[in-house]
Length: 89
Image (cartoon, rainbow, N blue to C red; front, top):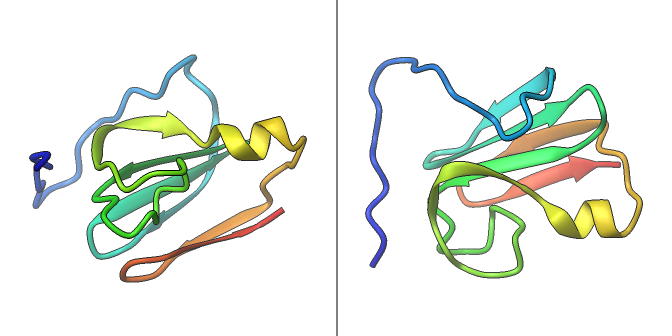
């Protein structure tokens, strides 16, 4: 099982390619950000597929949700629930 660190205090995050973030949402064990360019990055606990990467793998590193990019969808808003992630495109 993958180990996911839990941080009780805010921490700086380096996103790949240094995009400008326009929105952030946190679930109980995962986080998602929307960039000004309409891309979605997620990280954290992924047991129920809530990270959107097509698997149940957890990640401490922010990763772009490639499925949305491949479909040509621009993310407008994200809301994380306890074990879910809702995206408006």
